[in-house]
Image 1 (cartoon, one colour):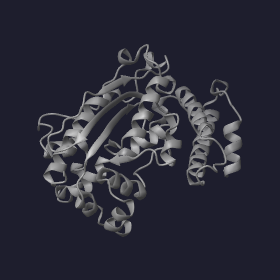
Image 2 (cartoon, one colour; image 1 turned 120 degrees about the vertical axis):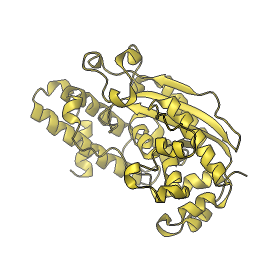
Image 3 (cartoon, helix red, strand yellow; image 1 turned 90 degrees about the horizontal axis):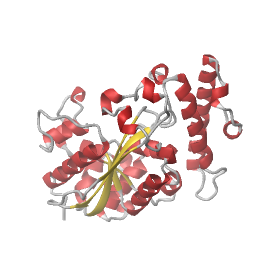
Image 4 (tube, helix red, strand yellow; image 1 turned 90 degrees about the vertical axis):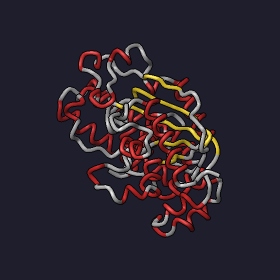
Length: 321
């Protein structure tokens, strides 16, 4: 599929309910997801202000694909590979996030980080961090944002400093189609969210008040997330205006997992299967989570744990002014 074909596919509206054959549904899903990837990449790579189409086209196609996936069923999609989830943030975003935390010129951070960001760990600790930042964590019903739903959002803010504590946080549950009252909420074994938590709640895509609040927060302060490529991928396809602000440079995304991997020397000495950069493991090392405790996998709880762990790591590395 080329770009023109992807645009044509996105503009030809096919009601998912009209596709009753399993093979037809699978083929349509595959076309949708291929088109979403092509459109997203073309839009992001086009010069700012000269995009060949509105990003609304991409979000609308993702919405349509989500309806189709509801018909296919989560169990059948569980092992189907997707392309809408980025594995990591681009290097430019890693550099830009460090510059934002340090109130430093991006070019200076890039020089310190070196080719391929091989010395990014040095760049992270070269200048002190300060200022107000936000933190976000979401719980979802799928790995892929063009297939599943955001069902829980946690948001907090903290003034970076050795004794700072996060301000009172905010959390919200978001609904999903009624069919899940019978089939159960996907991935409940991870996040422990049940239909009782979601009943009567507006879906994230229709919760315009929540969307506006999140976008305003992200445009005001750098936001931190552990494995931020996950939140970034979901917001790209589900938060109205996010992709546009992100591309225009009004949103700074900070990946605390990348920070952990680069500045915590213990990461390099622990076995890979111990997942040393996972939030739960990192938090135990920094004693912000007790040895017998587990990560909650619920938005606000995980944001608070992330902030406490980041603050402890920054203090350990003498990164505060």
